Image 1 (cartoon, rainbow, N blue to C red):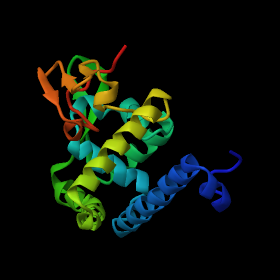
Image 2: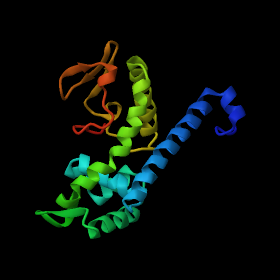
Image 3: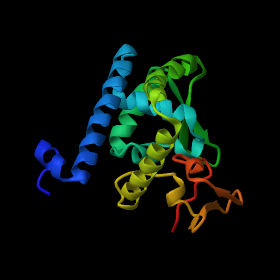
Image 4: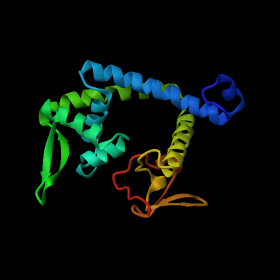
Length: 199
């Protein structure tokens, strides 16, 4: 394979076609995110940080964790977060046991705005409603598998079942040892709050 972005390569090679498809989907996401960010005079990264912080626990909302989550340097994450604190959208919550440690939280006055920021995701999800439920379930399963491969290769941060200490695959499906239940493929999580990274 020479170039996954070559239309001729995509005719001959299914992997190339899949990667090129991901690139096109990424363009849709980035375009929608960019429009939302411009509306609120934010950068795309600042928008993603606000949405993430609003939906995740404190342990994932430190500068280091956020830099890791969005695959940016700690300095880049710190600059964006500092701007959001200065604008009054975020507040620092200091650790009472360590004066240097803190996590970030959405300021009360910014909660309505942050809720509106995530609406571009709802619009994208709305376009998928024309797909058959079984198609969507197969697509979700394929997405999880792809992200599992990318996570194993160290390309992304992951809190999905495939990279979790509690997850087990067996011949009849999947099992979560934390919840002590068998799971159908559609119940596997992409972003689990109880995730524990495998050693």
